[in-house]
Image 1 (tube, rainbow, N blue to C red):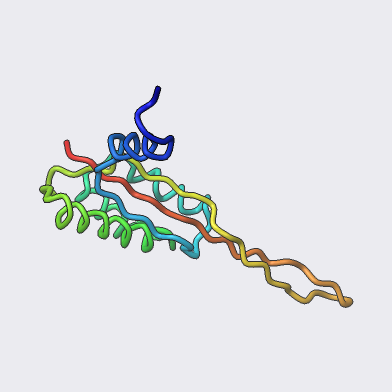
Image 2: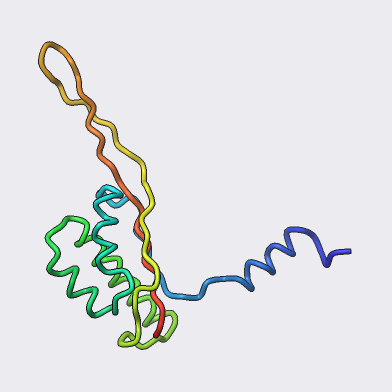
Length: 129
């Protein structure tokens, strides 16, 4: 017979398997998923200082948003986990699809074209070397 109720067993398992690495997430960022992924692929696996340097000189809209998320993750590592920022690197970074705003663009002869303004959810997880 199991120890306790199923919800108690799940709660204990979740506490034991909790990821303690510092991370930051931005939801509903107004940049498309594919454009953000191109920028994230350039900094994946790099040291934090090198990643900030790369993002500062990347001329894409997603780079500004990702730079803010990275700085937030660094601050979380420093304040919440008491980690040294010189040893940090980007362990994982991924983009999820957010909701799409649908707008109408008037066209010739009374027709209408749809404009899709896409958004994304960007997550960065750091780790120590």
